[in-house]
Image 1 (cartoon, rainbow, N blue to C red):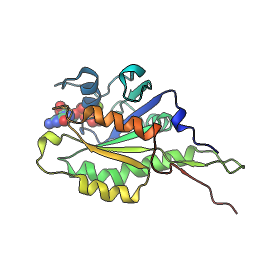
Image 2 (image 1 turned 180 degrees about the vertical axis):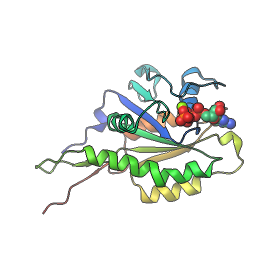
Image 3 (image 1 turned 135 degrees about the horizontal axis):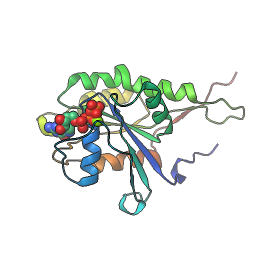
Image 4 (image 1 turned 30 degrees about the vertical axis):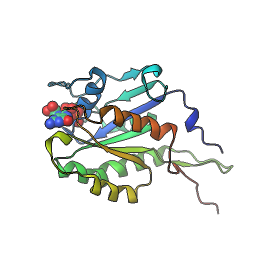
Length: 197
Ligand code: GTP
Ligand code: MG
């Protein structure tokens, strides 16, 4: 079958990651172009009109909050999303470790348990494209990119990674651009053919 990703009429971006890494702050910083000192647990779903996105595609941005949402609601959002941004805080090693111990396996298992089998050689197991986002780069003077590149070697669905700061707005628009690009111009094979017997 033909990949249809590049013909998408919209892009749905979901942000997940440990509590406190700055998911809600990233979304609100993008929308208001300033850092919100106080944020709710979860941002309202927002739609960015096509004409103000770099790829000219209407883009929905969806926040996740473990306080407000159940595991079932998270699974449903992962399935609805076209790309998942896994956010960690660059000053919090635990949030980085949880990318491989929790979040990447969760996205994989959620997608494979909901995919259906078909008989004519179409891709069966869809791997959701992922962008790894290291937030709070304003707090440290080193980079976490070496650790992230090692993770990328094991998870080909990771399309790109970026370090940014909701506080200084550093790389905020880039982060959402990379997410759009991961859907519209994926570089890695996002589908695994089921083995034929
Ligand atoms: P949950 O909703 O609990 O899952 O957390 P979250 O990932 O949405 O994080 P949230 O946006 O609520 O931010 C958590 C804390 O980190 C808040 O005190 C923010 O002000 C702070 N924060 C967020 N982004 C940054 C950043 O780029 N730099 C710094 N220094 N602090 C940040
Ligand atoms: Mg939040």
